[in-house]
Image (cartoon, rainbow, N blue to C red; front, side, top):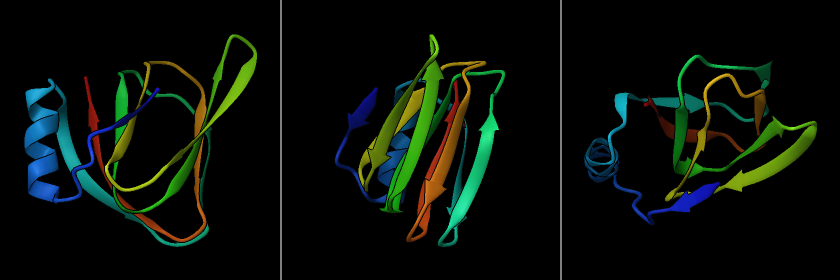
Length: 98
């Protein structure tokens, strides 16, 4: 589920994600110890890490999967899939959808 493009330049990452068909791209930043409760989105959503790191948990078929993302990596969470997120150190990332 984690994909690694190895790109940490924001403009370059935006360009690559657009080429991959992602839309509504914007940059977001969470301070240390930010936690997002379990939730869903109506579209496939990505989180592409530019700085820092985050732990994203995804629930599928009554199982919980953990994904630890670092700069240059991203995850696509499918529409209507339960997930949460936590950053210990803080994180800057690109959000988008398909």
